[in-house]
Length: 207
Image 1 (cartoon, rainbow, N blue to C red):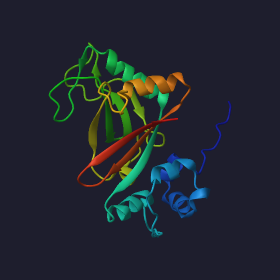
Image 2: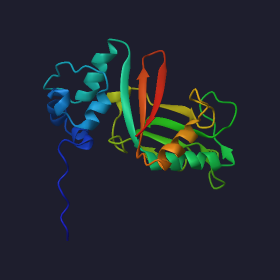
Image 3: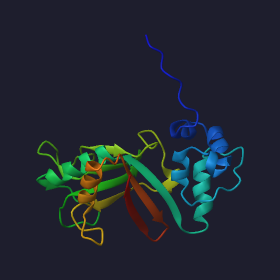
Image 4: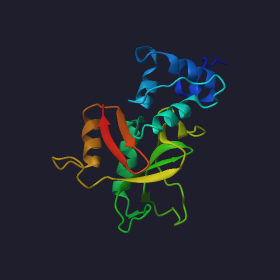
C-alpha cells in the first residue's frame, strides 16, 4: 500500500493541534512565517506567549482585543464559493437569517465547527427545520473539528451576505464579482474581517 506523506508541521491543522508548534510559528518574524498565518494575523501584533498556553492563537486575539479593533483574513476556494452562490441564486426558496423578513439569495457565513460559507437556498428535499443546507465551503485551515475562536472570538454566529444587492460603487453584486473572477482564472476568495464588540465590516477580494 502507498505510504501517506507526513503532515506538514507548519500547516494550519498542525498548529491548531499542537500549541508548541503554534508558539514557535508565532515567534518567527513575519517574513519567516507561513503565508496562512500572516493572513490570519493580518495587522494583529503578537505579544509574548506563556509556555503553558494551550491556545496561543486565541491568546494573540485576546491581547489584541484589549486594543479594540480586531482583524483577520479567511481564505476560501473560489470555485466552491461560486458553486454555493450559484446554488443560492438558482433556488426557488431561501431560508431566512437572524432578523431577516424578506427571502433572497444569500451566503451564510457561519462560525461554529470551524468557519465556513454556505448557500441559504432551500431545495425541495430540505425540511423547514434543516439546520445545515447544501454547499458548505470551509475556510482554509478552519475545517470541521477546528476552533476558530483564535481569530474570530468566542461566540458562535451566522452572518448573512447578500448576493444580488450591489456591493460595489459600479453596481457590481457579489455574485457578479465571483462569476467574473472565476472566468478570469482567480482561484481564491478572501473574506477580510474587521470587527470589535460593536460592529463588523467585511471586505471581499478575489485573486
